[in-house]
Image 1 (cartoon, one colour):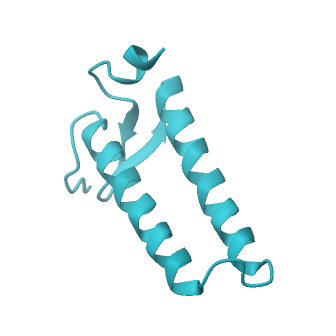
Image 2: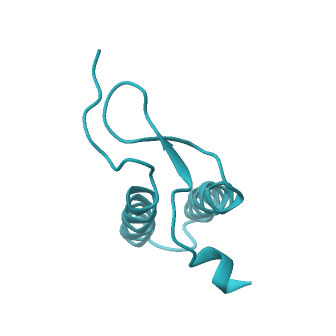
Length: 86
Protein backbone atom coordinates (compact mmCIF):
# COMPACT_ATOMS: atom_id res chain seq x y z
CA UNK A 1 0.00 0.00 0.00
CA UNK A 2 2.88 2.37 0.76
CA UNK A 3 4.16 2.09 -2.81
CA UNK A 4 0.98 3.84 -4.01
CA UNK A 5 1.90 6.92 -1.97
CA UNK A 6 5.43 6.87 -3.34
CA UNK A 7 4.44 6.86 -7.01
CA UNK A 8 5.65 9.79 -9.07
CA UNK A 9 3.32 12.27 -10.66
CA UNK A 10 1.02 15.09 -9.67
CA UNK A 11 -1.76 14.72 -7.11
CA UNK A 12 -2.87 18.36 -7.08
CA UNK A 13 -3.95 20.69 -9.86
CA UNK A 14 -2.15 23.97 -10.31
CA UNK A 15 -4.10 27.09 -9.47
CA UNK A 16 -5.52 28.86 -12.48
CA UNK A 17 -4.66 32.30 -11.07
CA UNK A 18 -2.14 33.10 -8.38
CA UNK A 19 0.56 31.04 -6.71
CA UNK A 20 0.32 27.54 -5.30
CA UNK A 21 -1.84 24.47 -5.69
CA UNK A 22 -5.53 23.89 -6.17
CA UNK A 23 -7.65 20.95 -5.14
CA UNK A 24 -6.39 17.37 -5.39
CA UNK A 25 -7.45 15.23 -8.33
CA UNK A 26 -6.04 11.87 -7.19
CA UNK A 27 -6.91 9.87 -4.10
CA UNK A 28 -3.41 10.35 -2.68
CA UNK A 29 -3.94 14.10 -2.66
CA UNK A 30 -7.31 13.75 -0.95
CA UNK A 31 -5.76 11.42 1.64
CA UNK A 32 -2.96 13.89 2.39
CA UNK A 33 -5.44 16.78 2.63
CA UNK A 34 -7.74 14.74 4.87
CA UNK A 35 -4.88 13.77 7.18
CA UNK A 36 -3.81 17.40 7.42
CA UNK A 37 -7.32 18.57 8.32
CA UNK A 38 -7.70 15.79 10.91
CA UNK A 39 -4.29 16.54 12.42
CA UNK A 40 -5.02 20.28 12.73
CA UNK A 41 -8.47 19.61 14.21
CA UNK A 42 -7.11 17.04 16.65
CA UNK A 43 -4.30 19.32 17.81
CA UNK A 44 -6.72 22.20 18.22
CA UNK A 45 -9.11 20.11 20.29
CA UNK A 46 -6.29 18.67 22.34
CA UNK A 47 -4.90 22.11 23.12
CA UNK A 48 -8.34 23.42 24.04
CA UNK A 49 -9.04 20.50 26.37
CA UNK A 50 -7.92 21.60 29.87
CA UNK A 51 -4.40 22.45 28.69
CA UNK A 52 -3.49 18.78 28.15
CA UNK A 53 -0.32 19.96 26.38
CA UNK A 54 1.24 23.43 26.56
CA UNK A 55 0.24 25.94 23.88
CA UNK A 56 3.77 26.35 22.53
CA UNK A 57 3.99 22.59 21.91
CA UNK A 58 0.68 22.67 20.04
CA UNK A 59 1.79 25.60 17.90
CA UNK A 60 5.15 23.94 17.19
CA UNK A 61 3.45 20.69 16.12
CA UNK A 62 1.01 22.63 13.91
CA UNK A 63 3.90 24.45 12.22
CA UNK A 64 5.83 21.22 11.65
CA UNK A 65 2.81 19.42 10.18
CA UNK A 66 1.98 22.45 8.00
CA UNK A 67 5.57 22.55 6.72
CA UNK A 68 5.52 18.85 5.83
CA UNK A 69 2.11 19.26 4.16
CA UNK A 70 3.37 22.23 2.12
CA UNK A 71 6.43 20.31 0.93
CA UNK A 72 4.32 17.31 -0.11
CA UNK A 73 1.79 19.46 -1.97
CA UNK A 74 4.52 21.48 -3.68
CA UNK A 75 6.29 18.33 -4.86
CA UNK A 76 3.07 16.82 -6.22
CA UNK A 77 1.47 19.78 -8.00
CA UNK A 78 1.22 19.54 -11.77
CA UNK A 79 3.33 22.23 -13.40
CA UNK A 80 4.91 23.25 -10.10
CA UNK A 81 4.27 26.37 -8.09
CA UNK A 82 4.63 29.59 -10.04
CA UNK A 83 2.68 32.77 -10.50
CA UNK A 84 -0.18 32.39 -12.94
CA UNK A 85 -1.76 35.63 -14.00
CA UNK A 86 -4.20 36.82 -16.60
